[in-house]
Image 1 (cartoon, rainbow, N blue to C red):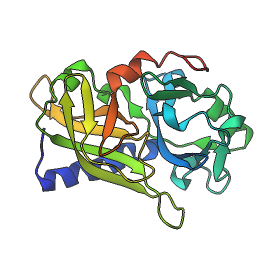
Image 2 (cartoon, rainbow, N blue to C red):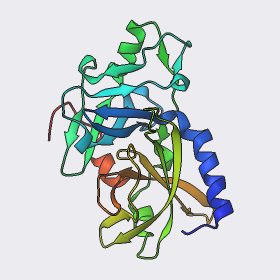
Image 3 (cartoon, helix red, strand yellow):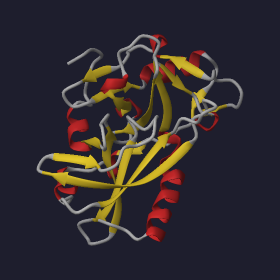
Image 4 (cartoon, rainbow, N blue to C red):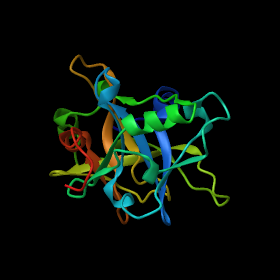
Length: 231
């Protein structure tokens, strides 16, 4: 669905309010990306951190901790080394997805005297196959919520308003995104079953040239009940 520019700005603003604290900066070696929290239902045990598989695996990976996602203020460290989190990432290179069950993140926080204050992307807006099927070769509005990379090394929260298309089974952002956007969630708006316009998390940005493939949420859901290790 292609929106006018005013409607796109409204959606971008709403995203920052609703799931702005789902987003974390991720870095592995010289690669910068974004990770995001997803909760499958109301049970905290169904919560995972997601990013692109290509970002994960090199030594020295670390998550940045934005001040807005922890409490109390001033207690959490600036970064968390992934080596300190158990269980660690499970990689699914065939789907482009890496999954980190967040139990280890919550234990790490508790041991350090702080806690997470996040807004996970909820299961209710994760796009199903019917949302993907409604995409076509005509470009629709897409919204990428990510942490960019500034020249001074800062990682501000940004919303890139882009275009998304589907060609057969391939879903793609049509333009190349700035550094730091790989692994970020992609959102679209479509009519729901009642005809009301609804927001959906379409999936995740994967690495690409002159555009980016999207790992759609039907693929992501297929690998969520996982244990650490490459599959």
